[in-house]
Amino acid sequence: ASIVNCIKSNLFKAIFSLILIFLSLQLIIKPWKKFSNLKINGNYHRKIVNGKGNIYEYSISLTKGLLISFCVGFVSSIFGVGGGIIHVPAMILLLGFPTHIATATSHFILIFTSITGVLTHASLSNVKLNFAIPIGFGVIIGAQIGAFLSKKVKGKFIEKILGLTLLMLAIRLMLEAF
Image: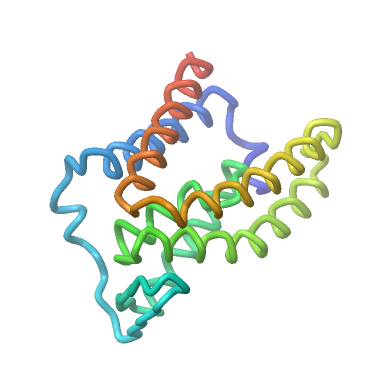
């Protein structure tokens, strides 16, 4: 978070929009097939059966997962986002998490990254409470609705929606940068 004050606003927006474009295209059309094949198979195997009887089975490398999470935390802190916008695609594309598991895991992780980011940015006087409080309430309500709706749709559809959302955000940031 301390690095943010060293980066010019337009450069910041341009770099972040390029990252979002890459992630969005990978989620929507997967143009980099080799990138998709980089999924990390690991030594930690999980098999989860949810309340509806859906089975989610995957394996990850805890060491590589921690390294990726550290990188996501660092990058999300620089860009002032909770991390889910970067973490969910990383878990799906790199670690091979099923989409529903990645989104649920991301929500849990956001508890810790958001608190850390908020405290750091608040100590640097980067938080405008008149905007942050209403947005926070919106996020809480939206998260509940999103969690409810995600149970009703397939993982591939969630990936496409996430990709389109990231692409729209990237375009907006790029337009603001120039």
